Amino acid sequence: MRNKFKNIQSVLFMTYSLIIIVVFTVLVLWFYHWSSNLLRANATSYIVNMGKSLQEQTDSEIQKMNNVSLNVIYSGLIKDQFKKYLSDQGGVKVQESSEMPVPSTSREYAKELADILTAAIGPSRPVEQLYLYDLTGKVYGNGFDNSESAYVPGEKPWYKPVVALDGGKYIQGPILDKSISKYISIKDPQYTISMFRLFLDTYNSPMGIVEVKQYYNLILKSIINYTQRSTYQERILVYDQSGSIIFPLNAAATQYEYEMNLSKQFQAKGEGHSFYVDPLTSEKALLSFQHSDYTGWNTVIIVTEDKLFIPLNSFTQKIVLLAIFLLLFAILLSFVAAKKITQPILKIHRTIRSIRPDNLGSGRSPSMELNSGLNELDQLHWSFLRMSERLKESMETSLLAQSQEMQAKLVALQSQMNPHFLYNTLATIHVMAEENMNQQIIAMTENMSDFLRYFSSDQSSVNLQTELSHTDKYLEINSIRHGRKLQYSFDVDEEMFDLKIPKLIVQPLVENALKFATQFEPPWDIRITGQLQGNSWSVTVSDNGPGFSADSLQRLHSRIAEMDKNHNIPALQLDGMGLLNIYIRLKLTYGDGAQFSIHNLSTGGAAVTIGGSI
Image 1: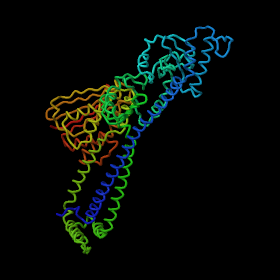
Image 2: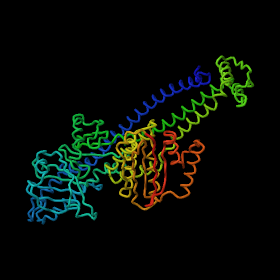
Image 3: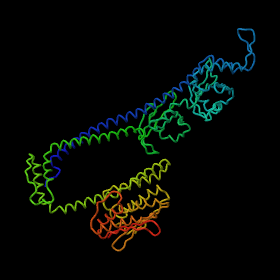
């Protein structure tokens, strides 16, 4: 017997389709590989360049502070005036160019010094506060705080490092600055970053220390603004050479200990990036490192791979949809081309249409020559005429077999899971995710995964223990969703666990019971019981819901009685016949040994019992 797929149209269609699929798949995979690598490189480059940009903007703000400190320490006028201010004890000094005494007070020196320092800061105010410290314990402020006060050098944590740097800059911060906070109207506490330099006189001898301050949120405004509008929900870390975290504010070093250790590999080069697996979340992430020689600060940008490649995922979806559309279109064209080549087959079709059931095998069927010029078609036509002679006697058997086959296939579809169950489960997971109910999410997704895997398997029959196990998972999913409103119990004889039964024969009953039980006020009670009786088994599913209406019971019993009387199986439906289809599956499996009964309970609710022979 020749293979029915080896006709001209099928061969041409499959050949054309195979060529199109292979060529198209290769092109799509190549294009996707090229474009995805490009998108990955662009996304990674964007993060790296953004790290450089943020570091440069931060360095620029520090540079402004540094310029002010340099203006102060290299200003001879400031040095002279500060020296007069500190050495003045309130007496009378005589000008060299005049014999008349001119009174000189600390207030006058302070005013002149304030004017000079204000000019040094400039109108754009790149710093908000400036302090001049002498080395004996006095400090003079200019800015919000214009007071003179005392300090203890040894108690200042920055004092020794500044003196040791011998004129080099020393950056401290951020710190909660109460001295500035009290001069402004903003209620929020203000953090500042300070830069210190040793202040030398004209003979290069230390005479004091210059401190310039700027608000923390102004120096790091580029980083703060970027985190608020970040594309990939990046985390940004800024820390100094000692490992103290500058951004985020008040972050614990232990929180970023792994990332800081990972960044050490880039210290020598001053920049770099790599992918790593976060030990806390097990997520793959990109780490971009930038070191500033100017400030000594390290800027690290951390972004998870899922967030980084969101554009790639969107692009992938579009490519897949476009590829499917183009592939289907190409296959359609191949089908049209193959069909056009095989037009002679239409003649065979006319012959087939002219045959009626009453002339099958009677010799009255058409016997004209096809003369298609193609051996395959001529032989197909001859085989059909020969087949018609034997078709009559086997038609009833074939139709019955086909009917049973179609019914069996459609019966398998009757156990479709209600899509509302899936929607409600996903909605519940969404709500639990917002509440950080991680353990419940894990339990629900594991049960859901197992249930869907069982639901979609090719097995037609399973043992009762497997069916009850997945029914329990279904109830557990609903229990997580409804909480204490749902109560259920299993009381099944363990000797029944190894019995082979049709798959998804118990769970739909539980689903049906839960559907109607939830129409009443909770708690909802679902009970599954099973027992052996001689050579038969039975399982009962009961609930405390509203029960079946009288009309529903009458219709269902009438349909069952009709099937039993006529010994026929009606056409199955995918919706609206759940219980009846379960009865049909039991009948097909156990024949007269099938058990199926439904009734309302005297205490309220309904019960459905199924079973079969062993």
